[in-house]
Length: 232
Image (tube, rainbow, N blue to C red; front, side):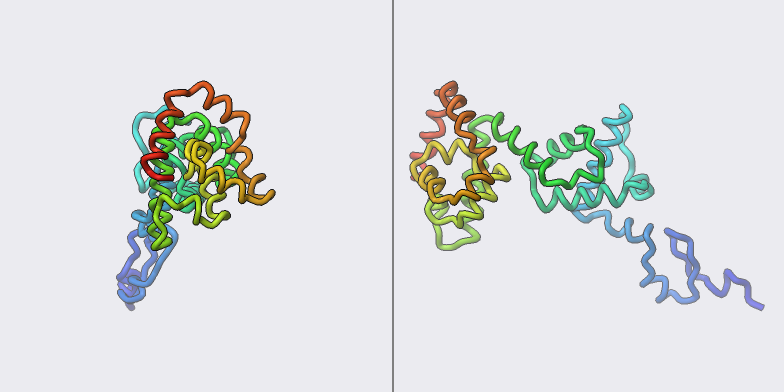
């Protein structure tokens, strides 16, 4: 009589389940194998990075956890879900955003709340230097132009779909530095309806920017030079 091991000679290296046929083993996907196979996916790598930030910041450890240790964590799915959120949202400075969320004290099941990203984005947009804001805005306009041929990138304010512009402003892709200091940018804002204006008000806050501009003469000069040279 054949032994149990000899009747199922093919064993999953991850869960140790035995199979009588190699073909069955090849199509078998247990949770441990699934996690191993997902290793190179962007959302998983992002979740893994967040997991290590959480571990290092929370324990004061100096050595990072391995991917294998991440796979065994009971929080694996929660971190991968957050990784998917970060991958889809494409936040400003992803690594900085990951650290911001991980150290925020917010429970992990709330990390994918869009309101958290909006707060992060608003704080960052209002504090970042003008050169960075201008560079990112122009890059966004160029990407928009590639997706909307033959529209020239510097006609963004005239031709962009207003809902798309709202999305770009909310996500910090187009900065108030370039909108409020260009004629076309201001004209685009005048075409926003009440709902659109309400969605971007916390970013385009006129009191904040009027005060910031009045205290930043050199930055205003740079912004206007870039806008003039770009024919915006």
